[in-house]
Structure formats: structure tokens, C-alpha cells
Length: 125
Image 1 (cartoon, rainbow, N blue to C red):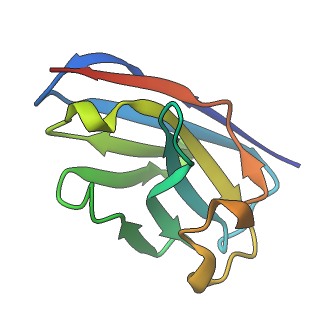
Image 2: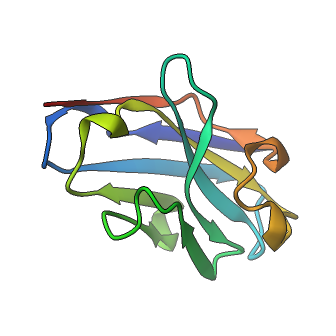
Image 3: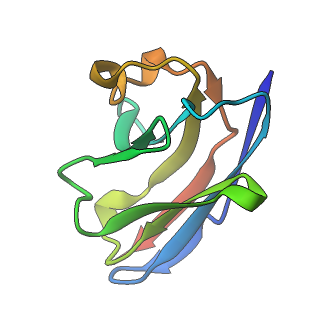
């Protein structure tokens, strides 16, 4: 079993930054994929970013150039650095994981087996 725990959400003014953390515990492998998704009120869960099998990183067009994934393997933690935040970034952010995700599914939340509890990010204008 794999457990994911997010932290780092909060309230920030437009143009500011936040760094989300996702601590991963349990049985994973070098093929483990971590994805970040978000869900705003009344909207569907949408893809934000992912590091596929620990190698290749992907971003949605809406966050490309502003958000960045990094990881600390020694602490089993994946970070989502969010810069130049905008009010439309306001949402609950989730980290998700999967051991056998194929590349074509990396942006599809339905294909991830493990989910964190979510952390609220609010960007004020």
C-alpha cells in the first residue's frame, strides 16, 4: 500500500509563490509516477503536472513556466513549486501516484491508484 500526504497550501496574493509537498510512503518503485491535480469548486479535477516514472516531467499549458516539480529522494518527498500565482489557480491541490502508469495516461486522473487528502490553495487578487 502507498500513502501520500500533501502539505503547504494556504492563502497568497496574486503574483506570490507557494510550495506544496507530497510525502510518499509505502511500496513504490523506480517506475512510480507522481502527478499533481487540482479541483476548483464546480469544476472537474484537472491535470497540473507530473513526473512520469521518476524521469520525464510534464506540465499543463496553464501552469507551464510558472510551476515546477522537484523531489528529494532521501525524504521521499515530491514538491510542486508554484510561482506567479493567479486567482484562477485557486483550487484544492492533490498529489497522486501510480506504479504502472503508461505515458499516454499521465494526464488522466482516473488512471492513478493512490491519492493524498488534498490541500487548499487560495490566490487573492
